[in-house]
Image 1 (cartoon, rainbow, N blue to C red):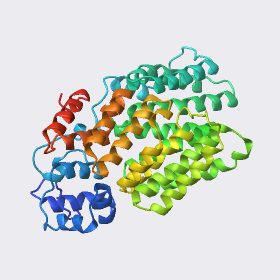
Image 2 (cartoon, rainbow, N blue to C red; image 1 turned 45 degrees about the vertical axis):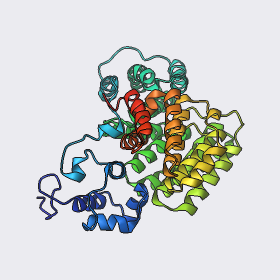
Image 3 (cartoon, rainbow, N blue to C red; image 1 turned 90 degrees about the horizontal axis):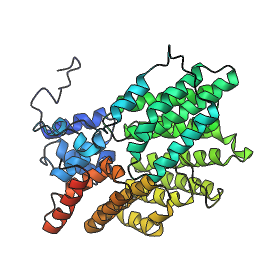
Image 4 (tube, rainbow, N blue to C red; image 1 turned 180 degrees about the horizontal axis):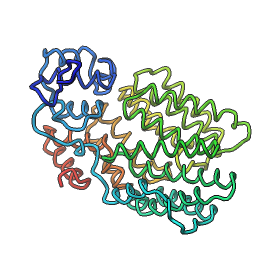
Length: 413
């Protein structure tokens, strides 16, 4: 037992309700917020915590694990260990190589760094490959080690302050690319190191675009970790910083500013603050409408078509299934040119249908997501949870369909 007298739920026999309360309070979540995240009321959470209701069935357990960001199902049940990898995704085979590249220091490496223009061209090619490949992690994972090493050498070998700033800007964007590879994998400490290194490099480069992208990703990391206040601070501080550059007419800076406004709305939706969530979404939409119809930001995917996908996400996070389905019907996935982003949107559509009780449609949309980008579904916790829930369906037809999808995304391996 810790010195503060709080029982450790992993060392003593603790009822499920007490384990739930301990994990909830450690995450700083109210009963209202946790209930909203799993589709239940605050009174339901209280009833479970106080023992008036028993241990929920598997579908709700999976939602609780996801909402509380815990490592193992046993942290809630105290029983059989089921690693969080089951519903957050496995580690990619290239993860060790990427980790090694992130951890390596270029000290003593006298090989000349490539010219910055060549590095920028390689980086742009890596983003294009990510958006077009169904196995985008495989593609990006093979490119990242070389990009990391060359970008770090470019920073250390720069001959002037201007060259060093430009190299740091490239390094920051390499860190951004790395975060897309690491996300949803069992490598949280690595994700945080890369996010923080990207922010530091962007600040040292004094590059508004790089800083905005780094802030966009850092805010997501904070929100996914349950630290919504930190996510708000990052989006608001970065947004205020970028506002001064908007009159210059730089489309990429405007896009990143708009993406940050949506992130603020996403966090508000997680809190259940509908008015703030839709207000931020509308501000982001107006920013998107100032961009050309064909514009698509290579990192954030910010664009006119993506605003429809964002509307579905807001409605889903607000637990409004019918509104989420309505928004999904208005925003075709085919309008999004990026394969992984299109698959990610399909997952949001599936969440909408699942929330509205349209389970067959949810599975159909998940299958479409898998067709667009199998790796996106394989590593996405929402998708894995929905498939796992349907494996428990009372309808044999739906269980069989979910079983086929589970096999394809590696849940049964």
